Length: 131
Image: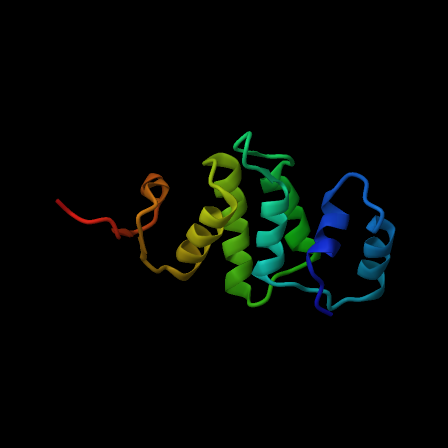
């Protein structure tokens, strides 16, 4: 059974009006899963762009959630787990964390002007002009 972001939020937040329903669904259904899109939306929801930080412990929360609500396909699950670490430890914004996570999980290079990728083990091909 596919679930979306409100399900993840219900489990991630300390108190949510859907929390009991989400927990009950986890007990009743053994095929619950989601996509990288739902986790990306969760990252966006928990990111305070003015403070340039996350409002929850992203690494812990996503690691725990992925165990309960896996991501399909599996390579995207690995990307989400990598993104959680990058968001937490390297201060990556939600989208940059996901892009880097996909790049690392798939072993691809990334063509981008985002220089934050240079801080991590990613082969970035500069999109910016070379002078």
